[in-house]
Length: 83
Image (cartoon, rainbow, N blue to C red; front, side, top):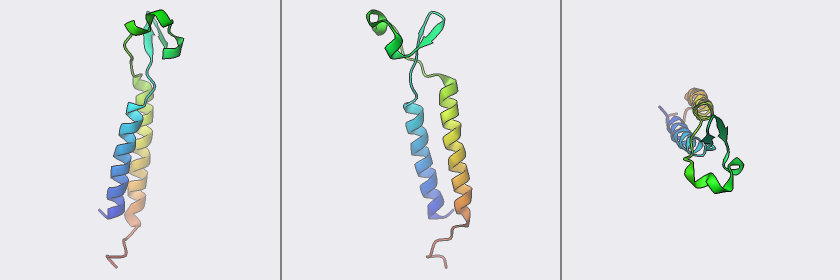
């Protein structure tokens, strides 16, 4: 593993964490899912935010896929120190 691959893995892990934590939250009222702005103002404090698993999974898999592709693409890069 060269230094470029290590950098790519660290950046990918950071991006993965950021994207999962910034997934938009939704609120469930009876049978429907609503965003925070769609909830009535009087009842906003009674609902706990939910993270939709499908949205988080799509974002997570896209970051993991890009990280893996860059990891293997940088395999051919040889640093100048080894030459």
